Image (cartoon, rainbow, N blue to C red):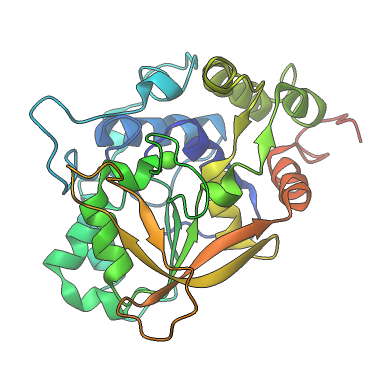
Length: 319
Ligand SMILES: [Ca+2]
């Protein structure tokens, strides 16, 4: 992950749903740098009142795709200079970060057959690098749930390209061409799930519930961006939807699609995820499961219920 406001919300979802076991977290460069992303993971764990018994590993600071010197992008303009909006918690302690890198974490986890789902809410840099270093892990990753791509809708960072794919198109192309089963949660469904200040006020009690207060702080800058850029008073829940699909797949429908990623930087559609709509049988790339529809009200109900307080945590949550 590359927290990032919506990554932080996705992490909170995973932390608060009973029965979810986190084996480890690796960060990638994306919205902000990989090291800053890892500090933002620690910040979010602290906000949730969780002391991690799993490693938090810093990933690669550079994408596998070549960017011109000094030209590597980020999304600080969307998520704030440190990636978490106007949150003003003290800096977390760096020594809480694992000495293991995110690439090493992936190789260790999938060095043998595994039932651990790999949820990727940032660029696929670390996964592609791990696959390059240890090709045998390909057969041991049971499934990747990836937030990325714009399949039948416009992009966000470019006319046809979604940020996580565009940021490291070479890594994305590597993973889409692999045999690893993959569920892609793209903008087609992510943009169907709006989250508004009214949702926070009505379900997350930001005045009295610590997690609600944290969410209110980290989302304000993000919501300001959407208001300026799209005239929409709220934000979208890209990464929480991907995390939710990993835990509860029911609210999302997928279709097997053959996906190609445009990696030619000179192309006007660089970073585009191209699916072939034609009814033809011969294909070269393995099919991936691309999300095509979402029951957004059911997802939103589950999302708010996971992040809101239980009666034990909050003496008088409104019902
Ligand atoms: Ca992200």
